[in-house]
Image (tube, rainbow over the protein chains, first blue to last red):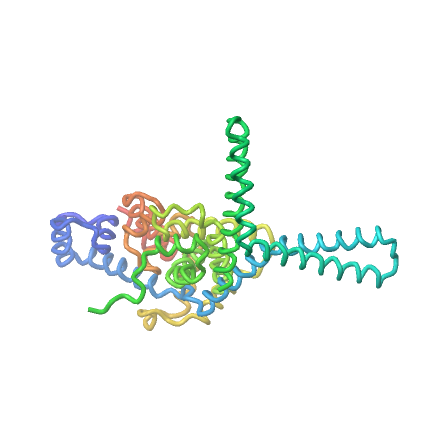
Length: 187
Length: 194
């Protein structure tokens, strides 16, 4: 290395600290005695300094908040089909009541819509009330017991009951999971 | 000894994020926003505004696909790949429609960015020249140079981030620098060829 000039690659590896101990020591000694290679090494180091000083984008202070906002907005968009579904259901319900009642006035349609909403609320509250009543669960257990008794003689029926129960459990789990994810995203 | 403020690893934060924990994800965004900004910048988003838009898009896209992230792999490498792919797609789309010149974008970056540690000795004109030449480099050379010298990542980190062998990283950086030098000072480099 002391007789000939260093290669461009060796100079680069030396500047980057990538040479092994012995080649590194030899290159250091060579640079002391060879002005030409020392000049090329200086240019190598200058290029590194120039690159490091380039004005690349820095961190954006609002970026975290912007990302969070965008994710929430998308979460809200994802949730929207459910609300559209509820709205569409109410509209269909009120439309049906409107046709059955043969009331073709605008106020009649509005009243039908309100009635349908009220009926739906009453139904939901009744279901919640029933779920909170221990008697309901007693009856469910009783029905299940009867069903199992009935099915005990028939393995096919028992398997059917089991599959139905599993499907209900999976659906409930998926629904709860989706709700929990949405609630956490809105925090 | 001072305890780290948040000792949780990226991978644990990513697992929490995948369960819908937005606070955990905010921490990941804060940790990696600078790296992603520079990756998309290196891939052609030359203005701060473009780079920020693309960085935001990267993190939103990653959030949507967190269920595909494998926690046994580094989160940093996963999100860097998403950023790189998005930047390439954007660059392709941009190249198909007329837009303001990149030089104008670069000048805006020069005007809005603070100087780096060694910038006191370097004139803006030289920086423009260097940026311009850097932009002309093939993508695979430009990216490793930005990661090594602007983001100041180690060779190991670049290797992990780009899923490349160490030898390839060294070769790309060396060849990229040589190409850059030739474009900056062709007369001198021709004389140096040995």
